[in-house]
Length: 374
Image (cartoon, rainbow, N blue to C red; front, side, top):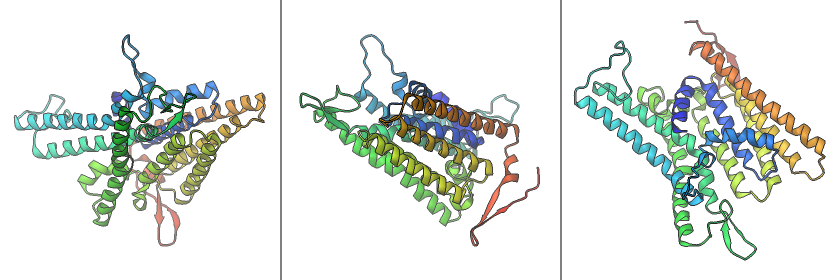
């Protein structure tokens, strides 16, 4: 999963359509976690998508004499950012040692240098900034699973015998020493991961914008993936998207016993996001705005389908028709996103700039920009 995400992470920096497709898959797998009797066809579809949320429970080991439970999953999940950080730090150390030892370039025509084999201080500076950027990006990828895991630590229910157990793992008794320790780490994780890191990124971007440093080399290398796909006035939009993900995670965990409330709030969230997307159109490229809007519409349809599935008055025919409609619409969006991704590859990296829209903030109008072809 880590190797897959590292590859996808690199591609999504070059091809933003893939980044939006992965964001859609993450949000859809969260919606699948709502307490709704989803049909098997839809459940299997989104179960595959859950791998993009680092759903390690989907690939847990089941060897003889070894059991995987929420207790192990909890600590493994909250330690993932630390392990990734230590891994990147070790890799930077290898690059530094290679540079100090006087290591030369690798024999790849003189134009390609292996990521850790830097030869001078300038290359090493770029290398460690790139490594730090990759670690920040991985924190964003892990955001959903961290939110869900940390919040689930506090959700208990009472068994018929009066014992309080965790809802996610009935084998874990609430209030014992292990659970108290988990809650302490969960509180720290919520402060650091759920709220701290997004706030730190927003503050950093805000300070760099105020100092007119967003176009500096260091800012572009470390944080550029957070704002380069958006119009200059929407440097903060990635934080808005993170807030959207947090609300979905909160609905999934905190209101699990009220599925219709989950779906109603999720539908309102999707409608608000669609309206803000249509009004602001934050992306630099028109097709990315269209792709993001289509993803939000697909999620709204998913919520509506969930309301039908939880309705006691719906007939079997309505269930089947709704299932096929949502299944086809979801597959259609995935193919549309893959088509946009393919189109992004076929064209050169700057091909979409001819379709760029520039916002005139003084009059609130959209003006088409014409650019010379390279």
